[in-house]
Amino acid sequence: MERGETTAQAVLAVPVLLLFLLLGVQISMFFNTAQLAAIAAQDGAIAGSVHGGSETLAIAAAIKTTAEQRASEAKTPDARIDNGVIEVKVILHVPSVVPFFTSVVSRSASEPLERFVLEVDR
Image (cartoon, rainbow, N blue to C red):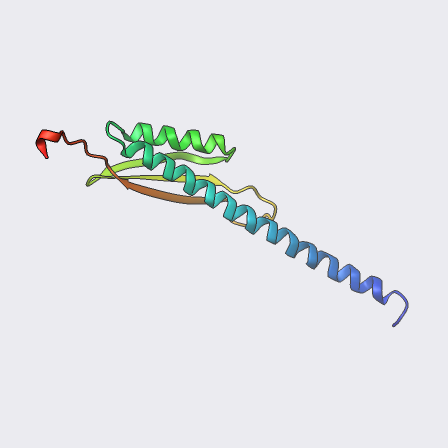
């Protein structure tokens, strides 16, 4: 080996290894944020599907869950009721370690609306 060859190899290898490490951390943060968005959407859908629930209650539950998990909302969650099913969509910011990585993640959940039927009507 020539004098300084090891230093030259280290100078080339360390940034590449550091990039792989940061990319692994960024991917982990992406999947964690996606899971948080899915949980918030599911909580919102469950809150909106109960008897007497509404789109407003679904959005409030999704916002509350997002705040409890300390996630950063990209925009206010969206809820809509259609054909006896409520669907809640949550969009969250992904914390950035690597600048060129996707900055938002979106997840949605749906639940059938609960129907209350009196015993005599069954």
